[in-house]
Every structure is written in C-alpha cells, then in structure tokens.
Amino acid sequence: MLQERLIHQLSVSKSYEELLISEFKNKCGSEYTKKLEEMIEDIRLSEELTYQFRIDQKNTHGDKISKIYSNNNLEANIFFIDFFSFMVLNSDSWVLSHSSDVLLPDKLKTVYDNFTTFYLSNYVGRKLTLLHRYSEGELQINFTREKHRLKVSTYQMVILLLFNQELTWTFEQIQDKIQIHPKLLLKILSGLLKSDLLISDNPLTVNSRIELATNFLSNKIRLNINLPSKAEEQKDRYHFTKAAVEERRMFIQAALVRIMKKKQTLKQSLLIQEVIQQLTSRFKPDIYLIETCIEKLIACEYFQRDSNDNDTLHYLP
Image (cartoon, rainbow, N blue to C red; front, side, top):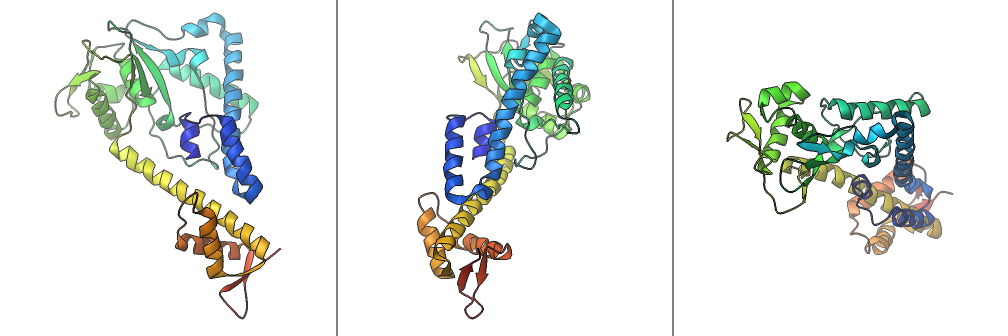
C-alpha cells in the first residue's frame, strides 16, 4: 500500500512512486489518481516544512538546539533538530485511525509546540492533530557497555524516558505521570517487558512495580522494539484491506470507463469479461465488485442502460 510505504519510509524512491502514479493517470485520468497525488504532495511539503523548521529553530536558538536533551541513561536522539522530522498529512487523503493521548516530555513537547507555532504562522486557520500511533523515534542506551540504539514508538519513548528520573516506578505512578489510558499502558508495558528492557512482577497488574533492567544485554547494536501487537495488526489489516478494496475499485472504475469510451455500447457481461482480462495481471477482480462499480458509474451518469435491453450499456459523453 502506498500509504504504508510513505508513512514508514519504505518506498524504493519517491520518484518511482510518482512515475507509477503518472502512468496510471495517463491511462485512467486524473480523477482516479487525485488522492494518490495528494499523498505524494503531502510528503513533499512535509519534507520542505521540516527543512524550513530546522532553519528557523537554528536561527532562533543557535547551537543550543543540538543539545536539547541528553543525560547518562537514555539519550533521545530524536530531539536533535537535525534528526527531527514531521509529516503533515491531509485527513481527506489518508486512511488514519485515532491515536490515544499521552503527556509528552517537556523537551519533546517544546519542539512540537515550536513546530505548531511555526506551521500555523504559515498556514493560518488550519489545525494540527498529533497522531502518536504513527510516530516513532530512536533512543540510545547509555547505561550498558554497548551503546544500543532502540527504534521505538512515541508511547514507548515516553515511558522509557521516565527511567532517566527514577529506576523504579509503579504502574499507577507511570499512568499518573503520562496520563495514558490504562489499557494502552498495560499493552505497551507488556511489550517492553518482553524486550527485557524492563522487569516487573508476573503477571503485570495495576499494582506492579516496574524496574529498568540495568543488566540489559543484547548482541545487536540496533534493536527495533516498535513491533505491533496482534490487536494492532488486526486493526491495521482491516484498514489496509479497506484501503486495498478502495484502490481496486478505483482500478476497476478506470478500466470500465476506458473500455466503454472506446466501445461506446457493450453488453454488461462482455464488459465484465474485458475488465477481468485487463486487470488480471494486477489482481483478480471480483465480479460483484465490478458490478457495484458499474452501478456507481451509471448513478454518476458515465453509463446508461438501454431502454429495451437492461444488459446493454451505453457510454455517455
């Protein structure tokens, strides 16, 4: 999925994505690539905004910005302005689910607030909503012999940074400190316990005491602990399946219009056959989905059924 690749920076290159969209646009028309183009444009504008924000902050704060957060246990490299990036995504173009709130550390909140001020000074009247669920960063462990680097979610980062203040916290203290929903906190802590970065009672409860594993060992320098839970995977699978169906519907509608524009008049059964033949190399089109696309195009006045033969379709110029 294009969305997944762009958010998690998994694309081979942005130019390659733009080329694919351009080819699709030439064959099917701009109507069917509008949202894809908007997604690419959001990423381009976000890169430009991030660059402009870094310059603004360096001009405002000078060299101090590179030392915005550091201590003896965990160093949040994401706070270094040269490693800090933003994605500003249009809610009309992206399929994004709601993220639970959490209190950010002062240093991180300062950077976010500074960006919000910077952004709204350039785009008056807009509103930014921080989506923690899609945000991630990098922490460095400084209390071990090897300086391990951790890829973490924002939620994981907020919790782990608490252990720079105290080596032991209760579940209730963590929840009170960062104001996160108890069920979400329980899930995130369970994941951190499995990674062996934290240790606690078994099983984990709201009365548990959680400690930093100061004897942490790993044969890997870089560790990705930002792994989705089964529940998150199911939720993501639902959203991506829904997005995939929408993407296929877009391909099918484009094929239907292209065929009918050429044929002008065609039996619905033959039209379905041609659509299947054209799209089989991409995916196996579902006949029911093709039929619903035909009905939608009729409703949008692209096609019209013959008054004497309900199975015959006419293209409307």
